Image (cartoon, rainbow, N blue to C red; front, side):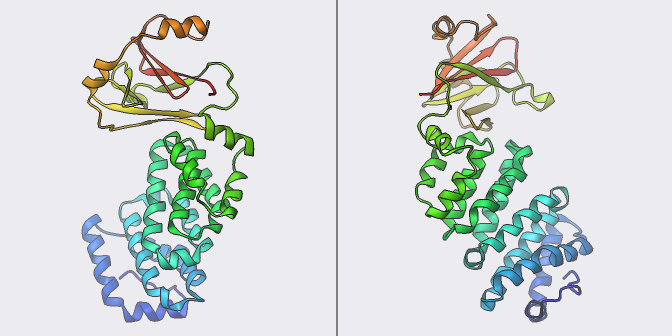
Length: 323
């Protein structure tokens, strides 16, 4: 096992001495999985990130030290081994500080919570990379009142929705109602106003009495977008879906953000077959000057949301209005 000479917490030192062979085997397994793991980096992470959590979360419950440390030890090997701890060091440092805010939960369900928060980080990096630290900040302001793992998951979901993960809107609203009152109040402070939360519960768009152009989504995949070719939109099973002829994405949009979820299990052929431009002329007549182009290839209407695709663009054009 990597050197732990700098660890100073007595109970942890004793545990490591007692279980050195077990941890040595685990270290070897991850070294085989990822190649050489830098022992200096690993040792430094143990001291700077793991030991403080062990001290704050197990001082009053020493019997939980063994299971919690093993979870954090394995999680450390995973993120250091795959390189994410080096690439996203501050994100992990700040997320791991959340464990100290929920000591009772992290003692009882460490693996579940660690895996869930790491999964949330990965999802946010993929779809909202600029909002990761905002999400962590929101979690710091709202997670402390959680009394179950389900509360933590719901808290993470709502904070992700606030960061623009619009596909989480329905689950975020329903799970909010089941949270402890303190968590509800803390989360509500993260919204611009209580009225905004109430409005978003009723409609995806706030304060839009008539349709307005919201923005573009997608773009050419070669420059960071989603589509290899100009896309086509349709509604399939009540969901707005967009395809470039090869891959299909689902569009979710509200006042907090827009997101295209990739790898949707809807064949491109189905989207193309169900695509249409019917309804476009009616929309243009009711909303003059909102559509300044005449090369539409498809249009589709979802929940207070209208999208148009063009023959000459890799973007989709999104319009919204309040219910």
